[in-house]
Amino acid sequence: MTVRTGEAIAARAWPHSRGWSRRTRRQFITGLLFISLWIIGFFAFTLYPMVASLYYSFTEYHIKRAPEWIGLINYVNLFRDPLFWKSLSNTAYMVVIGVPLSLLVSFVCALLLNIKIRGQSIYRVIYYLPSIVPTVASTLLWLWILNPNSGLLNMLLGEIGIRGPNWTRDPAWSKPALILLGLWGVGNTIVIYLSGLQDVPVSLMEAAELDGANWWQRLWAVTIPMVSPITLFNLIIGVIATFQYFAQAYVLSAGVSPVGSGLGAPLNSTLFYSVYLYQQGFVYLKMGYASAQAWILFIIIMICTLLLLRSSERWTYYEGG
Image 1 (cartoon, rainbow, N blue to C red):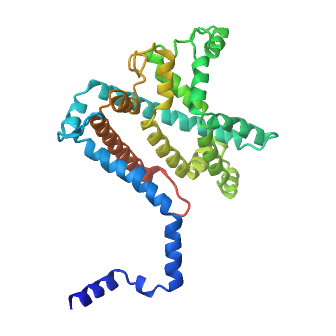
Image 2: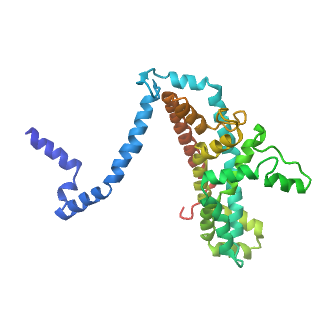
Image 3: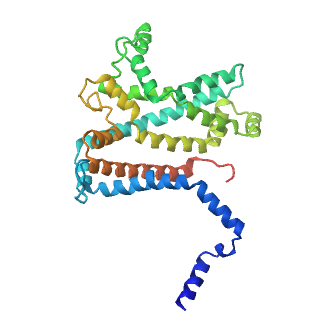
């Protein structure tokens, strides 16, 4: 009786599996085999590290010793750590200033590249090329461009009578220097905006023109609302990427600081959240502390993403309603 009851429950829970033909089962198993490598990779390289880091975040774990359970002490110590707040404020600076500036520059470039002129495709390739240069190579290139003594940018500023700042060695200018570096590689965002601009209905633009709207009015009332979903996508991707900002700051620190002076040079002005996490985990080997940082970062990114999605209901427009 118990066996029959179990079979009846299973049949109700999986009503379709009983009706599967042999061909459907064979296709299902074949599909599972095709994605088995992905499933194994997901469990081995994503799910297991996430669960392990959550456990380690409640332990004192030096990589040479077994983890020791300490509860919430890592999290409490983080909130008492001045460098944790410094790294968070540096990252917030890049999110609040760097991301909107990047979106604005990308949108303006996409508008220009959407104008039908001779050589349009060549201009598009030129604007996209910097985004395929490896991050380390582009950062080294910009270290030369921003060199206060022999760099190209300060030489050009000098030609018009402006004394250029000490970009990479002055704490007040190190983050603006990294924002400039980021603006150089916005090719991917430009391409996404360009695809959105080409989907703006011509009929809407013609109707606005017939109503007497000038270029600015058409841009404000038609183009910007129509590409607002693209803006939302680029904004979320930009915020997530900036919270994980690492490679450029790491290379910049190595390029401007003497050997052994540590990451975040000059004077911790480029000590971003991911750089500090890397320092704690892979320089000081404090894996438990670094794991706690990683989970706080995850929570911050999740909250920011949810807030952006929630606020987007007021400023995004979807043609389908």
